[in-house]
Image (cartoon, rainbow, N blue to C red):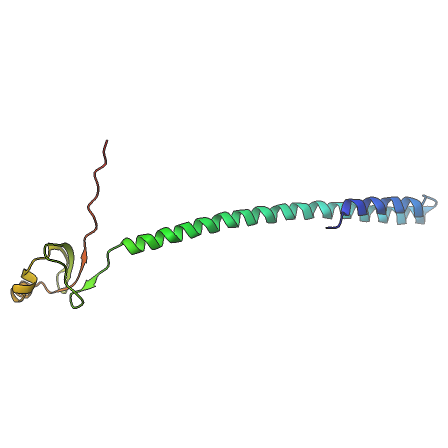
Length: 146
């Protein structure tokens, strides 16, 4: 990287050598060179501030990308853990499993799967229950110990 401070100092030194302050025109030229040197120093300070800001932004972006990656993994784990509806045409639950049933006309109900689904299915349908899907119930909440 260019050392702009050194460049500005050399520009000021050159203005004194070239224009030893004899007459109005030489003072004008020396002033221009000094103004250019001042502008170079200001630009160098702003460049350093911009570099620091870019570094901070990169660091912050990396932090949030890490957080986003963690949140995405947690969401995927959660999604995988959530029970999904299983069509009764696909398979039926195991006998005595506690399940959530979705019936065609009546909506949701909780039930323990029993052989009634198999043996008395016609009566089950007669009562207005036509199961179309089911899902296992999640684990019950654990009691917190005091």
